Length: 206
Image (cartoon, rainbow, N blue to C red; front, side, top):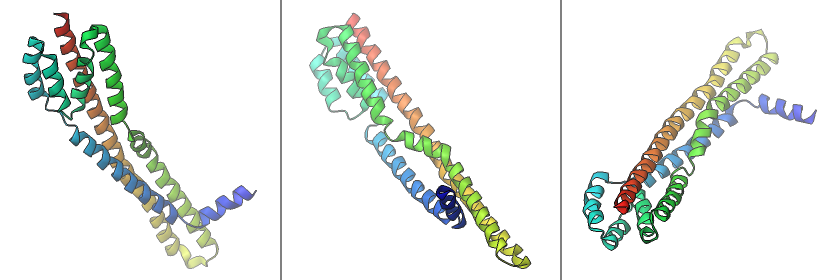
């Protein structure tokens, strides 16, 4: 019974608090998007140049020079390649295991906080819809305590309540777009890393 009263009081209070919640989630979403964007920028990878530089070294078997080249590169793909180089003297199996472990670490690092964007993108419209429902309840509550001329006021309240749904969509759309974009970039990084690993294993086979 107390729970029902608390929910009723929450509804009667209107949807303003829902808008503040959505505003807070929007700010958090922008912060995550900026953070993940900076991570990708700092670890960007010049694939063609990197391959052009390491292929001659691989053919020469210049492992020390290869490791020096990778250690100066901030790209995550280069770090996966370096993990394999460090185990080259132990054989192909050790190289493959080392690179796979580093790829997993890189994947977890790049996916950090992306679940927040995915969850927000999926649920922000429902939060906005909840705010709209609460606002409509508030409007009809106001109608119940006014005279018969309260129609325009109720319509204005309902229109205001619908803003919550619009704000929910406004918060969700950028979050979904960013989530899908970052996931695609993570996949690209992991696939590039795998390609470099295959190159290293092919040269070890020789």
